[in-house]
Image (cartoon, rainbow, N blue to C red; front, side, top):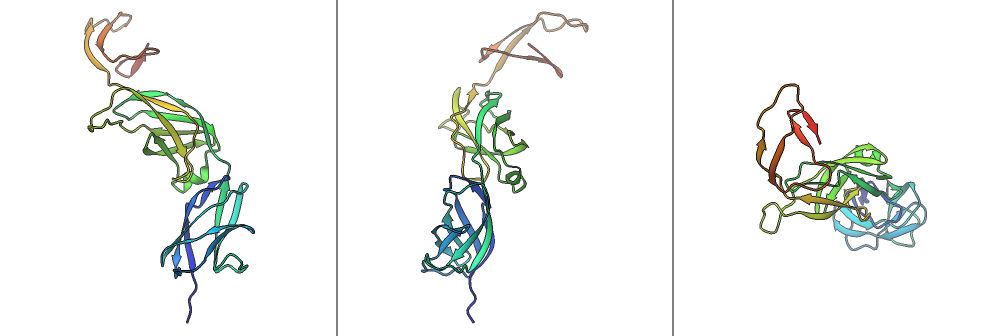
Length: 231
């Protein structure tokens, strides 16, 4: 007996209003060589590409925010879906600024991204990502206008830590559609301390300490004595 296609998951399960998300439809009994289409909501559709008997792919068309039915239909003129799932359209995220806007080339800086339309559902699904140039890292949801992520190490062509440079930093609510906000993060050369004078002082504090080394940055620089940081 004929067993039609079925959908078990859609990845990603959400995308921006402008469309363009490559959606993987995972299931069973996907038929090769058909003119199948994906229909989003009640009208917009896009061709479905057969990948295997358990997967097809299609690109989401533009649509306003909200959850719609994602239906797999056998041909463009058909009105009867053979399988249906849910896909959520969300307002496109954007980044306004990052704090701090620079960090060491070795990575490890906790960076806060400030912007709009960061998605709690994306966080629940494990979709949130930051991207430093071409390297992604997991983003942690704070609220719909703030995320944090950890900067990865920035390597040069030879695999060594790169010299100071600025790279674009972007984010994604669905693992694939990243913002294009034009915000940059500056990787700085590693700081090296050479000497500290004097090497000691009274427990009451107040000693003026001269620190010598390499690659100090202009602007606000902090010295840390134990757990206490001072300008």
